[in-house]
Amino acid sequence: MKQGIPQYVIGPFMRRVWRLATRLGIVLMVFSLAACSSILGGNGVYTSQTRDGQISAVPAGTDPEDAVIGRREHPLIVAAYGGIYSHQRTEIMLARIVSRLLGAANQSQTSFTITILDSPQVNAFALPGGYIYVTRGILALANDSSELAAVLAHEIAHVTLRHARARTNRVATSQLVDQVITGVLGGDIETDQTAARSRLSLAAFSQAQELAADEEGVKIAGLAGYDPHAAGRFLGTMARFASFAEGEAEGGDDFLATHPSTPNRIQRAVQAARGFGAPGLGETDRAGYLAAIDGIAFGDNPEEGIVVGRQFIHPALEFTFTAPRRYTLQNSPTAVVGIAGDGEAVRFDSAEVPDNMALTDYLKSGWIAGLDENSVVRERHNGVSMASGVARTDQWAFRVTAVRFEGEVYRFIFAARENNEEFIRAAEETIRSFRRVRAGDLRSIRSVSVEVVTARRGETADSMAERMGRIPEARETFYILNNLFAGDELIPGQSYKIVSVK
View 1 (cartoon, rainbow, N blue to C red):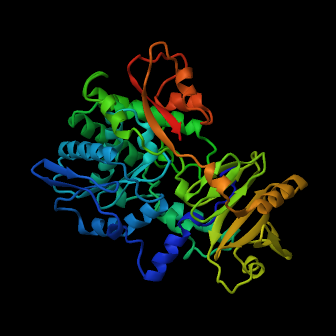
View 2: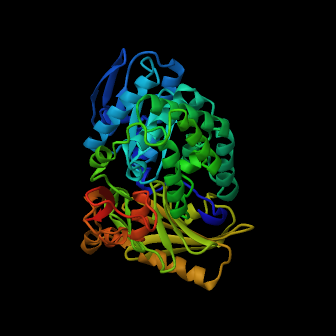
View 3: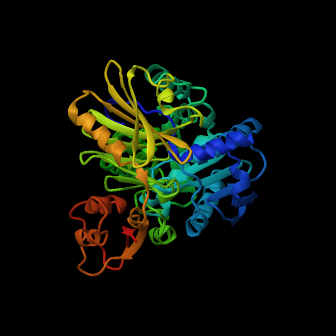
């Protein structure tokens, strides 16, 4: 979120899952719900079977304490990042790449589980015990097998170098989020799920650890026969993407936030690769990679709710609302966030509220600091019960609305530097738009995926981008997805990625 506007609590999209897990006395036992794939290792020979977006290398020898940490936190990571994504061709490709990397890393005695997360974020990270994660967002951004191998080798290096147990900034990161929740919202950090997720944050590797993983990852990928220069190349692509996507909701929750990237770092990756020789050596397998990811989902998962223009639609929970014209909405598994300029925003999430508690009493229950209790009023729009109030801190004005719909309570939290008429009108307009979805809302939802197409003779990047139709900023999106720049010529007969809406 821009300008230091605080972020609050886990959003509506995982709340029911967390609640069910709590009632059953379990912690989202994903292992019993989604079968793992496996690569059974022995003497450097691996056989692979893939299913449900996970690839497991399961020889003996994993540190018992690491294994406990990984098994405990794995279900929480999966839940926080939208679940496991299954795409068979991609899973088979991942299994083959991981097999080669593990052999090159001499890791026949270490257990690894690779999981594809159903998230559009461009990210990859590791947990103790050999748990490695890639999002479908990072899979969509890579352009060949060597680039994905560079990412996986980097994360394997973090695990083999035992960095995953030595996250030096983890405590500081958790304390910062705890201060936001308790100081601004008066929240309970023991139950707040955003605080829980921050304590699982993998953004805490030190710069020295990152550089060590870079160097070791380049070595592993090179020894496995992949282009060692892919690491520097893909870091550059991710930097372009991060600049392009600057200002997204939940900003900073991507690979370059968790793996700080600088020109110097990219140069060091290039220097490490030169130990294997000049660019052009090693396997890239562009054609094979693109064939494997053809059809992979792109952007938000509609099952988690989707943004269509200024409208947010959640088919599963059966509600929708529309933001004012000057707001830009972004969705994530934790919340929907809208930004209007540099000093105004709205966050939509959910809350645990007893069925017998009035919404007015909930607003007054102390979860938000600076509330003017005299401002709290009951409302009803489109047949939906609501309660609204006004709060103020030193730097922010808040307008807060709780909504009770189908047994769940949702929250609109508007924040602005100034409590002016335009801000008030935006808040009122948004809450009045909240209603049950209609058939027309559902018809506006489209399936969005990566489609691999072949360049025709005489086709340009601009004409290729035109195939992407209604995708916002299609031209720049096409350039970044294919690591091209203005003026680059397309090669007739070569495959390129576009984003297809159906």
